[in-house]
Amino acid sequence: MEYRHLGKTGIQVSALSLGSWVTFHNQVGLDAAVQSMSAAYEAGVNFFDNAEIYANGKSEEIMGAALKKLGWRRGSYLISTKLFWGIQDGINEKNTLNRKYLIEGLDNSLKRLDLEYVDLLFCHRPDPSTPIEETVWAMHNLIERGKAFYWGTSEWSASEIVAAIEIADRHHLHKPVMEQPQYNMFTRQRFDVEYARLFKDYGYGSTIWSPLASGLLTGKYNNGIPKESRGNLPGYEWLHDQLSNQNAIEKIRKLQVIATGLGVTLAQMAIAWCLKNPNVSTVITGASRVEQVLENMKSISVVEKLTPDIMKSIADILGKEQLPNLE
Ligand SMILES: NC(=O)c1ccc[n+]([C@@H]2O[C@H](COP(=O)([O-])OP(=O)(O)OC[C@H]3O[C@@H](n4cnc5c(N)ncnc54)[C@H](OP(=O)(O)O)[C@@H]3O)[C@@H](O)[C@H]2O)c1
Image 1: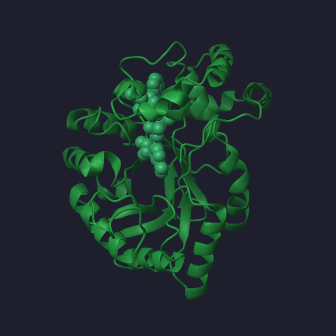
Image 2: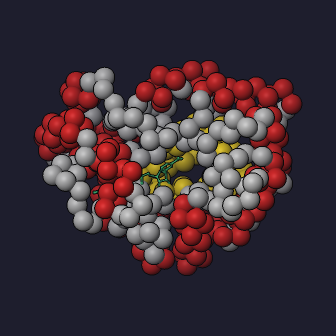
Protein backbone atom coordinates (compact mmCIF):
# COMPACT_ATOMS: atom_id res chain seq x y z
CA MET A 1 0.00 0.00 0.00
CA GLU A 2 1.03 3.56 -0.60
CA TYR A 3 0.11 6.34 1.85
CA ARG A 4 -0.55 9.92 0.87
CA HIS A 5 -0.95 13.05 2.95
CA LEU A 6 -4.54 14.26 3.00
CA GLY A 7 -3.76 17.51 1.21
CA LYS A 8 -1.51 19.70 3.35
CA THR A 9 -2.48 18.00 6.62
CA GLY A 10 -0.22 15.84 8.72
CA ILE A 11 -2.51 12.82 8.45
CA GLN A 12 -1.76 10.11 5.90
CA VAL A 13 -4.43 8.03 4.18
CA SER A 14 -3.92 4.81 2.30
CA ALA A 15 -4.07 5.56 -1.43
CA LEU A 16 -6.88 3.00 -1.62
CA SER A 17 -9.68 3.07 0.91
CA LEU A 18 -13.03 1.29 1.32
CA GLY A 19 -16.51 2.82 1.48
CA SER A 20 -19.90 1.43 2.39
CA TRP A 21 -22.38 3.28 0.13
CA VAL A 22 -25.02 0.96 -1.39
CA THR A 23 -23.23 -2.13 -0.12
CA PHE A 24 -23.45 -2.19 3.70
CA HIS A 25 -26.90 -3.35 4.80
CA ASN A 26 -28.31 -3.64 1.24
CA GLN A 27 -25.84 -6.24 -0.05
CA VAL A 28 -23.34 -6.75 2.78
CA GLY A 29 -24.34 -7.89 6.28
CA LEU A 30 -22.13 -7.87 9.36
CA ASP A 31 -20.09 -11.01 8.56
CA ALA A 32 -19.42 -9.94 4.99
CA ALA A 33 -18.51 -6.44 6.19
CA VAL A 34 -15.99 -7.94 8.60
CA GLN A 35 -14.54 -9.99 5.72
CA SER A 36 -14.27 -7.04 3.33
CA MET A 37 -12.88 -4.62 5.89
CA SER A 38 -10.43 -7.25 7.07
CA ALA A 39 -9.21 -7.95 3.51
CA ALA A 40 -8.78 -4.23 2.92
CA TYR A 41 -6.95 -3.67 6.23
CA GLU A 42 -4.67 -6.62 5.50
CA ALA A 43 -3.83 -4.93 2.20
CA GLY A 44 -2.87 -1.77 4.11
CA VAL A 45 -6.12 0.24 3.93
CA ASN A 46 -6.36 2.63 6.88
CA PHE A 47 -9.45 4.64 5.86
CA PHE A 48 -13.07 3.46 5.86
CA ASP A 49 -15.71 5.84 4.55
CA ASN A 50 -19.30 6.08 5.73
CA ALA A 51 -22.21 8.53 5.91
CA GLU A 52 -25.27 9.03 8.06
CA ILE A 53 -27.54 8.65 5.02
CA TYR A 54 -26.10 5.30 3.87
CA ALA A 55 -28.92 2.79 4.41
CA ASN A 56 -30.44 5.39 6.76
CA GLY A 57 -27.88 4.87 9.51
CA LYS A 58 -27.68 1.08 9.14
CA SER A 59 -24.36 1.31 7.32
CA GLU A 60 -22.84 3.11 10.32
CA GLU A 61 -24.27 0.47 12.66
CA ILE A 62 -22.76 -2.35 10.60
CA MET A 63 -19.36 -0.65 10.38
CA GLY A 64 -19.40 0.02 14.13
CA ALA A 65 -20.27 -3.61 14.89
CA ALA A 66 -17.61 -4.80 12.42
CA LEU A 67 -14.97 -2.64 14.11
CA LYS A 68 -15.92 -4.18 17.48
CA LYS A 69 -15.48 -7.68 16.03
CA LEU A 70 -12.23 -6.79 14.32
CA GLY A 71 -10.78 -5.23 17.48
CA TRP A 72 -8.18 -3.13 15.69
CA ARG A 73 -6.21 -0.52 17.61
CA ARG A 74 -8.08 2.80 17.22
CA GLY A 75 -4.90 4.62 16.21
CA SER A 76 -4.40 2.31 13.25
CA TYR A 77 -7.42 3.37 11.18
CA LEU A 78 -9.48 6.37 10.14
CA ILE A 79 -13.27 6.48 9.96
CA SER A 80 -15.38 9.14 8.31
CA THR A 81 -18.99 10.06 8.28
CA LYS A 82 -20.93 12.68 6.36
CA LEU A 83 -23.89 14.88 7.27
CA PHE A 84 -26.44 16.80 5.21
CA TRP A 85 -29.49 14.84 4.06
CA GLY A 86 -30.59 13.73 7.53
CA ILE A 87 -32.53 10.61 8.42
CA GLN A 88 -35.28 12.25 10.50
CA ASP A 89 -38.21 14.15 9.08
CA GLY A 90 -37.94 17.30 11.22
CA ILE A 91 -37.86 20.67 9.51
CA ASN A 92 -34.34 21.36 10.78
CA GLU A 93 -33.00 17.86 10.15
CA LYS A 94 -33.12 17.46 6.37
CA ASN A 95 -30.94 18.88 3.58
CA THR A 96 -29.20 21.20 5.95
CA LEU A 97 -25.89 22.18 7.48
CA ASN A 98 -27.33 24.22 10.37
CA ARG A 99 -25.46 24.16 13.68
CA LYS A 100 -28.10 22.22 15.65
CA TYR A 101 -28.35 19.48 13.03
CA LEU A 102 -24.58 19.12 12.62
CA ILE A 103 -23.93 18.84 16.34
CA GLU A 104 -26.84 16.50 17.07
CA GLY A 105 -26.29 14.61 13.81
CA LEU A 106 -22.69 13.77 14.62
CA ASP A 107 -23.68 12.64 18.13
CA ASN A 108 -26.20 10.26 16.56
CA SER A 109 -23.67 8.96 14.02
CA LEU A 110 -21.14 8.33 16.80
CA LYS A 111 -23.76 6.34 18.73
CA ARG A 112 -24.45 4.18 15.69
CA LEU A 113 -20.74 3.71 15.00
CA ASP A 114 -20.14 3.17 18.73
CA LEU A 115 -17.09 5.44 18.51
CA GLU A 116 -16.00 8.45 20.54
CA TYR A 117 -14.94 10.38 17.45
CA VAL A 118 -14.66 10.14 13.70
CA ASP A 119 -11.37 11.05 12.08
CA LEU A 120 -12.84 12.79 9.04
CA LEU A 121 -16.18 14.59 8.97
CA PHE A 122 -17.73 15.78 5.71
CA CYS A 123 -20.51 18.21 4.87
CA HIS A 124 -22.10 15.82 2.36
CA ARG A 125 -23.44 18.61 0.10
CA PRO A 126 -23.49 22.41 0.24
CA ASP A 127 -26.54 24.01 1.90
CA PRO A 128 -27.37 27.34 0.23
CA SER A 129 -29.90 28.15 2.96
CA THR A 130 -27.43 28.14 5.86
CA PRO A 131 -24.70 30.80 5.99
CA ILE A 132 -21.34 29.16 5.32
CA GLU A 133 -20.09 30.98 8.40
CA GLU A 134 -22.54 29.06 10.65
CA THR A 135 -21.41 25.73 9.18
CA VAL A 136 -17.72 26.59 9.51
CA TRP A 137 -18.20 27.52 13.19
CA ALA A 138 -20.16 24.32 13.90
CA MET A 139 -17.50 22.14 12.26
CA HIS A 140 -14.80 24.01 14.18
CA ASN A 141 -16.71 23.46 17.43
CA LEU A 142 -17.03 19.72 16.72
CA ILE A 143 -13.28 19.47 16.19
CA GLU A 144 -12.60 21.49 19.34
CA ARG A 145 -14.84 19.08 21.28
CA GLY A 146 -12.75 16.15 20.01
CA LYS A 147 -15.65 14.60 18.09
CA ALA A 148 -13.84 14.83 14.74
CA PHE A 149 -10.24 15.58 13.78
CA TYR A 150 -10.50 16.94 10.24
CA TRP A 151 -13.44 18.30 8.32
CA GLY A 152 -14.17 18.68 4.66
CA THR A 153 -16.73 19.08 1.91
CA SER A 154 -18.38 16.79 -0.61
CA GLU A 155 -19.44 18.09 -4.01
CA TRP A 156 -19.23 21.72 -2.97
CA SER A 157 -18.36 24.22 -5.69
CA ALA A 158 -14.80 25.55 -5.65
CA SER A 159 -16.11 29.01 -4.75
CA GLU A 160 -18.08 27.67 -1.76
CA ILE A 161 -14.97 25.86 -0.55
CA VAL A 162 -12.81 28.97 -0.90
CA ALA A 163 -15.47 30.96 1.00
CA ALA A 164 -15.35 28.42 3.86
CA ILE A 165 -11.54 28.47 3.96
CA GLU A 166 -11.49 32.26 4.04
CA ILE A 167 -14.05 32.49 6.86
CA ALA A 168 -12.04 29.96 8.86
CA ASP A 169 -8.82 31.88 8.17
CA ARG A 170 -10.37 35.17 9.26
CA HIS A 171 -11.55 33.79 12.59
CA HIS A 172 -8.63 31.37 13.18
CA LEU A 173 -10.96 28.36 13.00
CA HIS A 174 -10.28 24.81 11.81
CA LYS A 175 -10.47 24.98 8.02
CA PRO A 176 -11.98 22.40 5.71
CA VAL A 177 -9.06 20.39 4.36
CA MET A 178 -10.50 17.84 1.94
CA GLU A 179 -13.21 17.40 -0.66
CA GLN A 180 -15.04 14.18 -1.55
CA PRO A 181 -15.96 14.44 -5.23
CA GLN A 182 -16.83 11.89 -7.86
CA TYR A 183 -13.81 11.16 -10.05
CA ASN A 184 -13.34 8.46 -12.61
CA MET A 185 -12.50 8.06 -16.30
CA PHE A 186 -15.99 9.28 -17.23
CA THR A 187 -16.41 12.10 -14.68
CA ARG A 188 -13.40 14.41 -14.68
CA GLN A 189 -14.50 17.98 -15.32
CA ARG A 190 -15.05 19.21 -11.76
CA PHE A 191 -11.95 17.51 -10.34
CA ASP A 192 -9.57 18.39 -13.14
CA VAL A 193 -10.79 21.87 -14.03
CA GLU A 194 -12.96 23.48 -11.33
CA TYR A 195 -10.86 22.21 -8.40
CA ALA A 196 -7.43 22.77 -10.01
CA ARG A 197 -6.79 25.97 -8.01
CA LEU A 198 -7.95 24.35 -4.76
CA PHE A 199 -5.22 21.77 -5.10
CA LYS A 200 -2.56 24.20 -6.31
CA ASP A 201 -3.25 27.27 -4.15
CA TYR A 202 -4.75 25.72 -1.01
CA GLY A 203 -3.25 22.22 -0.96
CA TYR A 204 -6.77 20.83 -0.57
CA GLY A 205 -6.96 17.04 -0.07
CA SER A 206 -9.34 14.70 -1.88
CA THR A 207 -11.05 11.39 -1.13
CA ILE A 208 -12.57 10.54 -4.47
CA TRP A 209 -15.69 8.38 -4.99
CA SER A 210 -17.06 5.92 -7.56
CA PRO A 211 -13.72 5.19 -9.26
CA LEU A 212 -15.53 2.50 -11.29
CA ALA A 213 -18.57 4.69 -12.06
CA SER A 214 -20.66 2.33 -9.91
CA GLY A 215 -19.17 -0.76 -11.60
CA LEU A 216 -19.61 0.40 -15.21
CA LEU A 217 -15.82 0.55 -15.59
CA THR A 218 -15.45 -3.17 -14.90
CA GLY A 219 -17.11 -4.04 -18.23
CA LYS A 220 -19.81 -6.05 -16.43
CA TYR A 221 -22.57 -3.88 -17.92
CA ASN A 222 -21.39 -4.30 -21.56
CA ASN A 223 -24.21 -6.70 -22.38
CA GLY A 224 -26.98 -5.48 -20.11
CA ILE A 225 -27.51 -5.26 -16.37
CA PRO A 226 -26.40 -8.47 -14.61
CA LYS A 227 -28.71 -9.96 -11.99
CA GLU A 228 -26.09 -9.90 -9.24
CA SER A 229 -25.14 -6.24 -9.49
CA ARG A 230 -25.83 -2.81 -8.06
CA GLY A 231 -27.69 -1.98 -11.27
CA ASN A 232 -30.29 -4.60 -10.44
CA LEU A 233 -30.97 -3.49 -6.85
CA PRO A 234 -34.43 -2.11 -6.09
CA GLY A 235 -34.19 1.63 -5.50
CA TYR A 236 -31.21 2.08 -7.83
CA GLU A 237 -33.18 2.30 -11.08
CA TRP A 238 -31.93 5.88 -11.41
CA LEU A 239 -28.47 4.44 -12.21
CA HIS A 240 -29.75 2.56 -15.27
CA ASP A 241 -29.14 5.41 -17.74
CA GLN A 242 -25.50 5.61 -16.70
CA LEU A 243 -24.99 1.84 -16.59
CA SER A 244 -26.42 1.32 -20.07
CA ASN A 245 -24.89 4.36 -21.77
CA GLN A 246 -23.86 2.96 -25.18
CA ASN A 247 -21.18 5.61 -25.85
CA ALA A 248 -19.52 4.73 -22.56
CA ILE A 249 -19.81 1.00 -23.25
CA GLU A 250 -18.18 1.45 -26.65
CA LYS A 251 -15.24 3.14 -24.95
CA ILE A 252 -15.14 0.46 -22.28
CA ARG A 253 -14.70 -2.23 -24.94
CA LYS A 254 -11.66 -0.31 -26.27
CA LEU A 255 -10.28 0.27 -22.76
CA GLN A 256 -10.62 -3.46 -22.12
CA VAL A 257 -8.17 -4.14 -24.96
CA ILE A 258 -5.55 -1.95 -23.26
CA ALA A 259 -6.15 -3.60 -19.87
CA THR A 260 -5.82 -7.06 -21.39
CA GLY A 261 -2.58 -5.97 -23.06
CA LEU A 262 -1.24 -4.90 -19.66
CA GLY A 263 -2.30 -8.21 -18.12
CA VAL A 264 -4.67 -6.55 -15.62
CA THR A 265 -8.42 -6.31 -15.23
CA LEU A 266 -10.32 -3.27 -16.47
CA ALA A 267 -11.35 -2.47 -12.89
CA GLN A 268 -7.71 -2.44 -11.81
CA MET A 269 -6.73 -0.19 -14.70
CA ALA A 270 -9.60 2.22 -13.99
CA ILE A 271 -8.67 2.48 -10.30
CA ALA A 272 -4.95 2.85 -11.12
CA TRP A 273 -5.88 5.63 -13.58
CA CYS A 274 -7.41 7.56 -10.63
CA LEU A 275 -4.32 6.87 -8.50
CA LYS A 276 -2.09 8.37 -11.21
CA ASN A 277 -3.51 11.81 -10.43
CA PRO A 278 -1.32 13.40 -7.71
CA ASN A 279 -4.27 15.52 -6.54
CA VAL A 280 -6.03 12.36 -5.41
CA SER A 281 -5.24 11.67 -1.74
CA THR A 282 -7.23 8.42 -1.65
CA VAL A 283 -9.46 6.47 -4.01
CA ILE A 284 -12.49 5.20 -2.10
CA THR A 285 -13.32 1.82 -3.55
CA GLY A 286 -16.63 0.01 -3.10
CA ALA A 287 -17.22 -3.74 -3.09
CA SER A 288 -20.20 -6.02 -2.59
CA ARG A 289 -17.95 -9.06 -2.06
CA VAL A 290 -14.52 -9.78 -0.73
CA GLU A 291 -13.18 -11.03 -4.09
CA GLN A 292 -13.72 -7.52 -5.45
CA VAL A 293 -11.74 -6.03 -2.56
CA LEU A 294 -8.88 -8.41 -3.28
CA GLU A 295 -8.92 -7.61 -7.00
CA ASN A 296 -9.18 -3.86 -6.47
CA MET A 297 -6.38 -3.69 -3.91
CA LYS A 298 -3.98 -5.00 -6.55
CA SER A 299 -4.53 -1.77 -8.52
CA ILE A 300 -1.66 -0.23 -6.57
CA SER A 301 0.83 -2.30 -8.56
CA VAL A 302 -0.86 -1.36 -11.84
CA VAL A 303 -0.01 2.34 -11.53
CA GLU A 304 3.55 1.82 -12.81
CA LYS A 305 2.18 0.11 -15.90
CA LEU A 306 0.33 3.28 -16.89
CA THR A 307 3.20 4.82 -18.84
CA PRO A 308 2.76 8.16 -20.64
CA ASP A 309 2.04 6.23 -23.86
CA ILE A 310 -0.66 4.13 -22.19
CA MET A 311 -2.17 7.23 -20.52
CA LYS A 312 -2.29 8.91 -23.93
CA SER A 313 -4.02 5.89 -25.49
CA ILE A 314 -6.58 5.96 -22.66
CA ALA A 315 -7.11 9.71 -23.07
CA ASP A 316 -7.63 9.25 -26.82
CA ILE A 317 -10.35 6.69 -26.17
CA LEU A 318 -12.05 8.78 -23.48
CA GLY A 319 -12.04 11.94 -25.60
CA LYS A 320 -13.70 15.05 -24.22
CA GLU A 321 -17.12 13.53 -23.69
CA GLN A 322 -18.11 12.62 -20.13
CA LEU A 323 -21.07 11.20 -18.25
CA PRO A 324 -23.11 13.69 -16.23
CA ASN A 325 -21.85 14.03 -12.66
CA LEU A 326 -24.22 12.01 -10.48
CA GLU A 327 -23.94 14.55 -7.67
N1 LIG B 1 -19.57 11.72 -1.10
C1 LIG B 1 -20.46 11.20 -1.92
O1 LIG B 1 -21.42 11.86 -2.32
C2 LIG B 1 -20.31 9.77 -2.34
C3 LIG B 1 -21.15 9.24 -3.33
C4 LIG B 1 -20.97 7.92 -3.70
C5 LIG B 1 -19.98 7.14 -3.10
N2 LIG B 1 -19.20 7.68 -2.10
C6 LIG B 1 -18.16 6.87 -1.42
O2 LIG B 1 -17.32 6.24 -2.38
C7 LIG B 1 -17.33 4.83 -2.17
C8 LIG B 1 -17.11 4.13 -3.48
O3 LIG B 1 -18.15 4.45 -4.39
P1 LIG B 1 -18.79 3.32 -5.29
O4 LIG B 1 -19.22 2.19 -4.42
O5 LIG B 1 -19.76 3.96 -6.18
O6 LIG B 1 -17.46 2.85 -6.09
P2 LIG B 1 -17.31 2.14 -7.49
O7 LIG B 1 -15.94 1.55 -7.45
O8 LIG B 1 -17.60 3.07 -8.60
O9 LIG B 1 -18.42 0.98 -7.51
C9 LIG B 1 -18.33 -0.08 -6.61
C10 LIG B 1 -19.22 -1.21 -7.09
O10 LIG B 1 -18.74 -1.74 -8.32
C11 LIG B 1 -18.78 -3.17 -8.28
N3 LIG B 1 -17.38 -3.64 -8.25
C12 LIG B 1 -16.37 -3.17 -7.47
N4 LIG B 1 -15.23 -3.81 -7.75
C13 LIG B 1 -15.51 -4.69 -8.71
C14 LIG B 1 -14.74 -5.65 -9.40
N5 LIG B 1 -13.44 -5.78 -9.16
N6 LIG B 1 -15.36 -6.42 -10.33
C15 LIG B 1 -16.67 -6.28 -10.60
N7 LIG B 1 -17.47 -5.41 -9.97
C16 LIG B 1 -16.88 -4.60 -9.03
C17 LIG B 1 -19.54 -3.54 -7.02
O11 LIG B 1 -20.93 -3.52 -7.29
P3 LIG B 1 -21.80 -4.85 -7.59
O12 LIG B 1 -22.65 -5.07 -6.41
O13 LIG B 1 -22.57 -4.48 -8.81
O14 LIG B 1 -20.87 -6.01 -7.83
C18 LIG B 1 -19.20 -2.38 -6.11
O15 LIG B 1 -20.09 -2.19 -5.05
C19 LIG B 1 -18.70 4.57 -1.49
O16 LIG B 1 -18.73 3.38 -0.77
C20 LIG B 1 -18.79 5.77 -0.57
O17 LIG B 1 -18.01 5.55 0.58
C21 LIG B 1 -19.35 8.97 -1.74
